[in-house]
Image 1: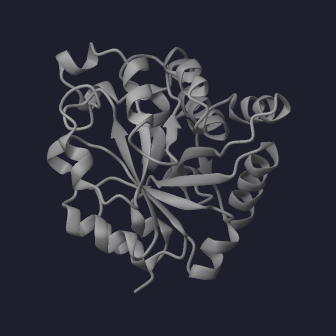
Image 2: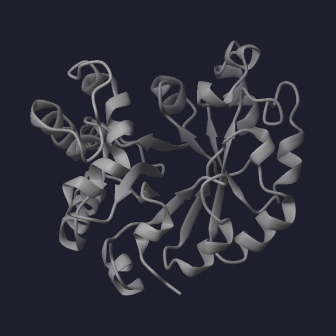
Length: 262
């Protein structure tokens, strides 16, 4: 764990992604990073408008808006857009199926991206599983960190894409392998290339051993930003060198893992 705001700034991280069910969103004011993204975990967990207004006074705020979900569907129920002040930017995404109903999962994504772009300014587009559709919008790209992220970003820049490129990365600010696996082992095991190498019901936390442990730790470099200050800073610099404008960290240990700012 880093122990000061100066150390957190030295990592080069741009901001944090926060889940309303996991953290007290008011804690964002204690972090020295300039950007915060509020993740969508279902319409019932969307913060109230006054909460958005308070947070926007403290940080450059973005809100994830799944265009297939009731409330954020620009071709149907779009009432949730009105709960978000106009000066707060969006991250338009197809939506994690875990947070969508069966009917929502069946909705076409492409026309909803198009309609949403007509009503919000300066959005980022979440690329996960919809890379071609996201790129076709011409909007800023928000990519989940993976094995091809650096190559993809270099390719986009070489091809002349000059819009914003941002990456979302589960982040563990510790060099301790046990701490890393406790924080992101389950997440790593859900990545398809990793899942295919693991036996069913394998332990994925600090108790992982042998080949299972080696597989998980090898995957950290592809899917997670982890390590001490120097390792984190070098990893973030590599992403910036590849073309990333913003590196948004999801604090996989919770905000406590980002230091004690009290």
